[in-house]
Image (cartoon, rainbow, N blue to C red; front, side):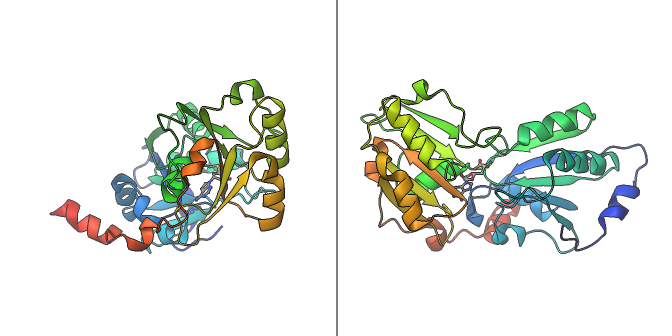
Length: 281
Ligand code: SAH
């Protein structure tokens, strides 16, 4: 936990308006590039008193937090769970009950595999007002940054966002429903179990030659995209060792991948400061 100022204890103890509850904003920070933040997220971050953030929120976005605000890192590293989910939810409740306005900043979209739903329910049960600010989720961010359309009239009529990480680790999925060649599959948290994912998809009838994109650190300056066949997915992961965060896109749309696509973030002229001026005028 990194505290700048004021201290967490002080914020939990003192209520400037006794009896009045604070509010929690569950804010999506997008997949990493700072200029993929929504304007609403930007405004909330720049005015924040307390920001409780995750591991996936990039340094450029954290740099927008005002110096006088308290930033609390509750990041969970894969395989090493620092602060438990129940403790994070409780922290949000305690801060709000102490009358604080809290920005809960989460990678991507808070309602897509981010456990934002669990935090919202906890807050509601404690009688705390909670607002949701959507963010660009990793699937759409990584797809755009690789030139891979998730749907395409000729190649995929639907797309599924799937977690590659079951409640106890190994994915527990309805494999039968994932076999359709005209459905793009996007696996979040799929790296660890990529062997099981490709084996099961193939054994349930998905073509072994289906192309897969592994998008590592999507939308960031150091994004890397690897292309493999479904039956060579595990081998490709072993050889090139992509790290978290990485996303798997499975389906014929991956054939449209554009290796030459410049990262928009590198060429964008819209900076958060510029956008702020634009809103104000
Ligand atoms: N709420 C987030 C997802 C949280 S689950 C969202 O909407 O994007 C965490 C997983 O998201 C990671 O394990 C990875 O699979 C994926 N992910 C998040 N950011 C990513 C990025 N920049 N590049 C690739 N994958 C990413």
